[in-house]
Image (tube, rainbow, N blue to C red; front, side, top):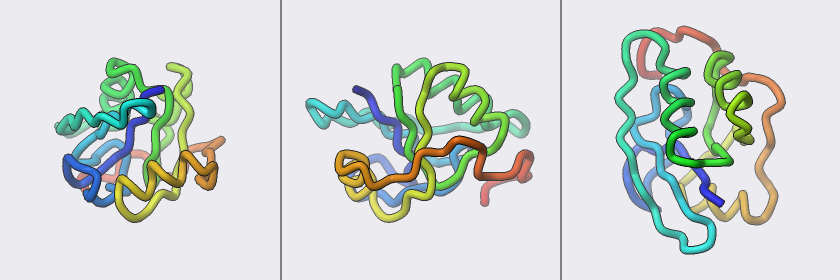
Length: 120
């Protein structure tokens, strides 16, 4: 399984970037090999969440772990069959382990606002 964790950096020690659509990086982690592919997120002025959802889908992720996700991104992720877990904090490693232990909260609805107008 491929997880996508939003982060402010490109390795296990990076902190969770709380905003899905405007996260600095998407870390795609293979749950079997624990290999990371870090992809810099370059959100546009408009449609950052939709663009981010497309990037995640194109990389084959089936799970997203983030702080919060807006309605347009949430809709795109769900349409692609991607499970969303929100409220993650700490490091990428901590979020990965929390998912493995089943302690993260699955989001059934968006948890962020649309059109926040830039990073955080």
